[in-house]
Image (cartoon, rainbow, N blue to C red):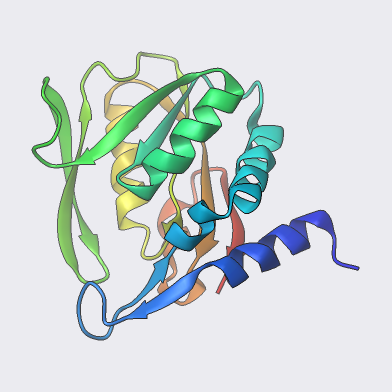
Amino acid sequence: MATPDAQLAADVLAGMRDIPDFPEEGVVFKDFTPVLLDTSLRDRIVQDTVQRRRGQVDVVAGIEARGFILGSMIAHALGVGFVPVRKAGRLPAAVHRQTYTLEYGTATLEIHQDAVSHQERVLVVDDVLATGGTLSATCELIERCGASVAAIELVLEIEALSGRDRLAAYDLHCLTSV
């Protein structure tokens, strides 16, 4: 019989789907959205993170867009605030901005300058770790605000893209990998 962690990892992999040639030809997108439809699986993912991080964080930062969904649920369960990390041009107040490289191009993320305060411990949440560019940019934004990245929580790591290497300075946990 599989351990609870191994069973959760297997269930997550079974719940995701591959979308070939998205967002461009040659990229296989790991689609997390079917997992969100499975309320039991989604709740198990949230509880897994909450058990590991309770008492260790002051705020959760979720990366657009699937990180918003999981991150806000995790923040609620932890009883802490939630901060969105958004694509450029979508936040109304003064922002910090960071441009980074993806496996298929470049992008820019933003966070409100006052989203987190000095000395706050931030849990960063997203669905998939690929090259690490998005997460690295997010960590830099949080640190630019004066807060610290307490940990990073992810659902899936694509090991062949070596994204973990860019995040070696952080406490990083992925439920499963391919």
